[in-house]
Structures are given as C-alpha cells and as structure tokens.
Length: 572
Image (cartoon, rainbow, N blue to C red; front, side, top):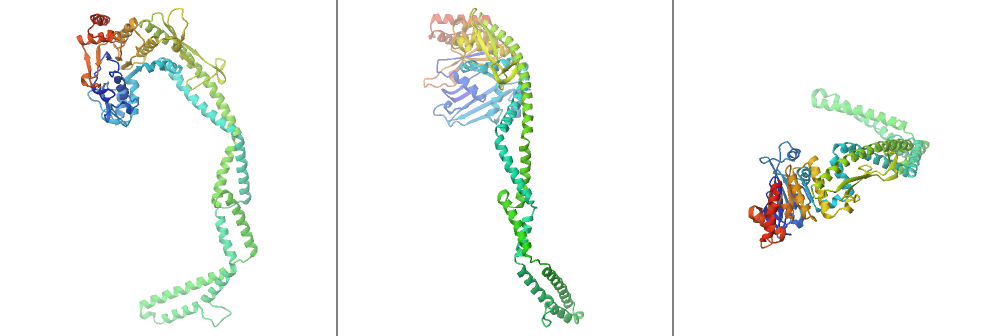
C-alpha cells in the first residue's frame, strides 16, 4: 500500500509479505493508520478528519494479488476493472472537504463495490470487534456463519415466511382496525351509486339537453327567422308580387342560356348559376321543413330543464360533467365491491396467517436444531484453540434458549417470541478454569481472555470460511507473559494458510512474525517513506528490546529479544 497525507503519514509505502507481518512502533507513531488505510481500500467510511492538516486530500493505493476466476475477480470485472499482472489495483481518495472517490482496476467505481469485495479479501479485527462480540446478535451471527448451509438454508426459508407473515399481519390489522372507517366509506359510496342509478344519466346527455334547451327557449325567434329566409329564397304565397331569390337566379340563367354557345367561359358561368339555383331550392326546402318541425311546446322545455337540473345535482357532487359522473360511478362500484368483500378477505388472511405461523414454527425448530448441533462443534473447536492460547482449562459453550410469549409461534409445544432470525437467543459462555461456572463472556472474561477468545473464534473460522488476509489491530491488548507468547505462536500457525498482519505492542507477538515493519515519525512529527521500514537482524533486535524494556541498548532486553526470536524460529 502507498499512503499519502493520511493522519500523521505524509508519504509512505507499506509492503506486506506473505505469511505473518507485524507492524510495530511507538505509541502515536501511526501504526493504526495501516488499519485505517486498508479500511478505506475496502470501502470504509471516509472522514475529512483523516486528511493530514494542510493537505488537500489523502490518497491510499493498494495492490492485491488475486487468482483468475475468483469471485472477487468476477465482481471486479463486472465493474469494469482490469487486472494488472494478476493483481487488482485499488485506490481511494478523500478530500479535505470529506468527498470520496474510489478506483478499481483503473476504473472509477462506487465505494459500495469495494465494500462488496471486502468480505472475501480481508478479515479486519480490532478492539472494537471484541466489544461487538459481546452483543448477543453478533454471537448468533458468528454461530450461523460457522454452521454454514446447515443454518443458511432453513434461515432463508424462515426469513421468506417471516416477511410474508409480517405483510399478511399488517394487512389484516389494517382491515380490522379500520373496519368502522371502511363501513362509513361503503355507505357513502352506496348512497352515491343509488343516487346516480335513480337519475340514469347517459354519456353526452348533458350536452344534448343544453342544445335542446337553447333551441326551445328561442323557438319563436328561430321560426320567424326561418320563415323570412324561406320567403326571400322561394317566395311568399301571401305576396305574389314579391321578387324572391329563386326567380332572380332563374332569370339570370335564362339570359345566359341564349348566348352560351358563343363563348365557353360564359357557358361555364351559366352552369354555375344553375348550381346556385339548385342549392337555393335545397336550402329553401330545408328552411320550410325546419320551420314546420320546430317544437315550441313549453311543456317539453319544462321537461328538459327539469332533467338538466337532475344532472346538475349529480355533477355538483360526483364530477364536472356527466362523463365524469359515470367514471366516478364505475370506480366507486369497484371500490364498493372491494369493501363489501372485507369479511371474506379477513377470513382468507386469517387462514393464511395461521398457516404461516405454523410453517414458521416448523422452520424455527429446524433452525434451533441446526444451531444446537453446530454450537457443540463450534464450542469444542474454540475450546481446543484456547488450549493453545495459554488457557488450557478454559471451556467455551453456547446457551441457546427461547423466551415464552403467548403471542409468539409454537415451537416444541410452547409459544415463544420470534424475530427475523428465528426464535433463538444465542449466548457465548466461558468457564475460564475448572470449577468456575460458565458465564456470559461479557461478564466472565477479562480483557486478555476476551482477546484470546476472539482470536480462537477467528482461527476456527479460518478453517471453515477462510479469507486470504487477516488484519488484527492490537487484539492482544490486556495480554502479557506466556499468553502473549502463545498468541504469537498461534498467529504464526494461522499465517501458514493465510496472510496475517498484526498491529501490536507486544514483543512476544512480534517475534513470531516472518517480517516486522517499524513505523516511526521524523522530527517534524510526520511519517515519510523512510518512516516505514522492514526490520532485519540487528534492527529487529533493537526494536524488540525497545518494546520489552523501553531501552534499545539494554543488554538484558537484547538478550531477551534474541531469546524470543530464537524461540519463534524453533517453533517454525
């Protein structure tokens, strides 16, 4: 990794070799920045406070060796990344304003993509993870992870049934709780539909009636106008001396007919006048028919206005026109059918809920059985690991229990509380020595014991669900003496099958490392390229002496450091 402007680190390169790498240095020298840097590369949360004071941005670049065909490579290639000689290049930039950018294999990617790759690349553990292990849900998750498909398969089925049960229960509660409101809604809809049915409106009827009312309201004026127009076109029988348009047009046509043969253009005009005469005759006939058919009956006008009033009463309540009223009626009828079916729906949902609760109880029992079986194996494996971590008489076990709840699901003849992960409360217990009662690790384990329990758990996981790299950030806190030596020895064994990086202050742990990196500040308080170096030979002895006694040149400390290195080499 190359780290620039991150915390106290100005510009440094950290080369992590295969096997076991220990990162050491004075308190505050920046050892934890190694953990922080890796966290950023793996999609961790960016924080502007990480940027070195005075710098515009912090940059972390990493090169991770991968194998073609791995799921990590497949996901990276899906994101557009390209491998560089069998390695995946990752970079993360954090600006002083807190903005973050991520690049994977030469492509800009969302930070979430890096987080997706994290679980399969590196397992990061620090003192905060120890505290997390104290939480019951984390302990259950650890057991489920160890159990693998034996728990994962029934848990997936349980989760699906649980979600469906929640959805059914919510819908059922809503229908029952809102029964009064829904009944009132149904009454309002039923009243409206009855009112509309009593009027029986037709689509477009309001437009037709408006036109008819306008016509009937002006019947006399319309009749007089049509009669006068007819007389002007076709003549008035009561005025035989009058000259009408039809007579004049006919005279014009006769005048042209006599000479039309002498000029084609005049003949065309004569034809057009003839067409006018025909059109005048048609219009005159229609005017006569219109005047005869015009109904000036005041009773009909009254009936039309009464009908329009009935339609207007509907449009005031249910829509701006008859078409909108009919649409409301159609939608309301469908809604009323839905509301009237509530009783039937309640019966259906109740039956489905009861069936799901029965199914959930069976799946919960399967989960409990699988967890119980896995807990015995898991506890035995962790107990065996603790024996190699200077806790030879410690015993780890799991308590798997349920809480009775009359509103819960039936499991084993009892109604018990249930949740999205089943009905089990899983708690990790520790008996540190013979005769001691098994107590929850939150109450029965010291800081050093908790560190070793967590390390033992990780080692067990490494055998069942391995990842390429393990990073431990001072998980040896609270440990010393023989226990520290045993932790170093166990980490060295873990490093035979995986890459192990440990940030530590314990010389007993660092002595077992295949490579030791020293992080040290310059005089101005920053860490530069020269501030992260590989220790070998005399330099490593001096650093272990400092860690042992705080004095690099102490002969006693040097002898002890050389003895630690010799012990580690012999154990390898």
